[in-house]
Structures are given as C-alpha cells and as structure tokens.
Amino acid sequence: MELKVKNWDYGLYRILTAQNQVGFIDKLSQIDIPTLVITGKNDQVVKPENSEKLAATIKNVHLVEIENCGHIPHEETPESFVDAVYRFILQVESTSLGA
Image (tube, rainbow, N blue to C red; front, side):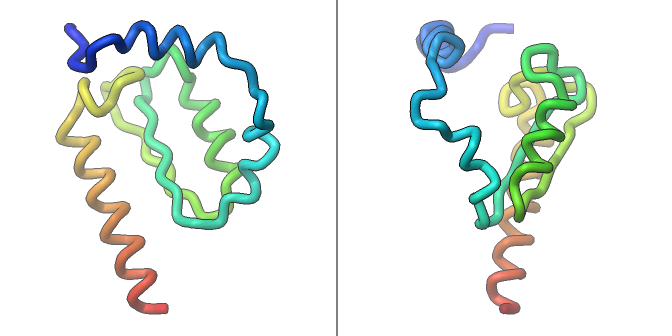
C-alpha cells in the first residue's frame, strides 16, 4: 500500500530517533480533557497493549481498537477511523452541553 503523506518516512525517522527531552511521558496523567486514542488491533509498530497502557494513564480517555487494522488506521480503514472520531466528537459535544 502506498502511503499518502509525502516524506512520511523522514517523519517516522525523526519520531523514532527523538528523545523524551520535554518529559511528556511523565505528564500524561495530567491530561484532563477528553482524549481519543485509536489503535489497530493488528498494529505491529505500537502494539495495542501499549495503546491500552497509554489510555490507562490519561484521565478522560476514550480508547478505540479497530478490527483488521494495523498501524495506520486513517489510511487502512478510513471509514472506521472517521466513524471513531465522529462518535468521539458527538460524545464530547453532548457531555459538554449537558454540563
């Protein structure tokens, strides 16, 4: 499958070689706004278990695991990805309107 984003490989290289210089991992538990984590159930780059650990760290999180999907859900299963984002937005919108 051809990736749609130009220079994606350079971006991936930069992410993989970056250091945690700002200490964001230690600050994940401080996130208290609605957060969406999406993972593919067949992701071999970031295993779904790691996405579950991430989601367990964030207070107000919604985790979506997409079936028959690897590491790039927005390209591999765009309909499922958009559906997850849309449902999340509706949920956040209804929660904030009801508050």
